[in-house]
Length: 402
Image (cartoon, rainbow, N blue to C red):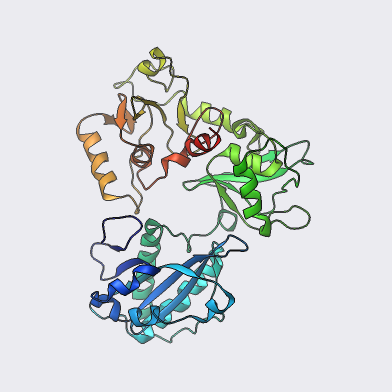
């Protein structure tokens, strides 16, 4: 709406009467001209707890969303301060009181079950008695909200990895230092990053040389590590090495120390899946590596890769461009959160013949690491966290250390 990622946003889906508004607290008074916000709707207040560093959500409903947002909320009495609101309304006025009360109850329940954020509601909102057809239509509304909210930066309704079955798409990985005495972790990789799961043992001591980033992370998550060093909630990191260092408090190459239940390291798993891509012979009959000839000939040492994702790719940086290598994989499907510009870029790549049958057939330059990560995976992506160097550090972590 305002042309900036940190300002106001509006989002919707085709063939759906719902509209989402994401508004920073300081911009509320500028929304007086938005007639949609004067209608009934459900809203979510987001902020962060200063003591624990954990994000929180408050689920609410109102006959007039704008009016309610300008009023105080009881959870703020303890000093909590929300910084941003995401509200969902229907311009055609179909969300009357009974329906928004139903949605408030359901979203509160979903947020509690997901265990992503601290839920600030003091009591469980009552559930309106509605007919089965109306409930079914509202459940479809909920599904659409769950699709849109992550694209606006919030995953409050997405279950933590430890709360879902990961035996299929997200197999577990294990870390152990000194037979578990100096740190023992359970982890998994999702599209968000590398997760250290609750129940992991966090070694209490930190080496004197450990990075400031690990020290800050230990301090930020101290509230969810019990007296015995057991992690009480899942934590997401940008790379397996950062996750491993958080656990043991010392240097670690996570690609080597994280292993599956068969004892195979993450690095070996990645090599097995990425160095010999199964490219159709009609495209590239002789492939000995996922690295392009240009990358080899230029002797580029700082190769990057997307580790542990369902789509495997390698890339390098040259002349201020981020270049994905020939033979890298390309997801043939897109997630609901795939940005429009990424969808259009992906269509161009296929139309130009640079991508065929799910593989890049030549080196392709991009303007940023996030754009190429999004194009490769078919969804929104933070490239600075997803692309890893050979030592297991993400681009972001490398920049912080340097």
